[in-house]
Figure (cartoon, rainbow, N blue to C red):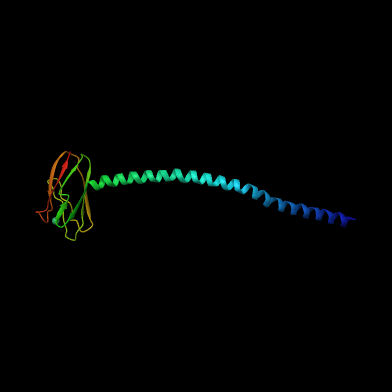
Length: 148
Ligand SMILES: [Cu+2]
């Protein structure tokens, strides 16, 4: 008698367990599409907003680069390009030596170090005026910065 009770309890447990197992996947099948849709919506929202931010930053970066580009002077073929540049008070000018010959930038206020190929020199002009400069190694190389 004890054995029969034991076996019936065991059987019912197995059946219940089996039912539970069978129910779980069914529930998941119903729940999953909702979750997937929710995830998709959430991911899309996060993606689009962060992408807008990235695009904003890229535009700002490009504008900053443009500003720098405007004040870039390339040293090539033993000349400063452009030879004359107009900037606003407080702006920087960057000279970049693009050729193998060494060059400097020499004004009444400062003389740069000797720039090898690829090296650059930056100076911030704080006061209005016209600044003529030469390369101290090749004094025939002339340029001017007009600060407004
Ligand atoms: Cu030079």
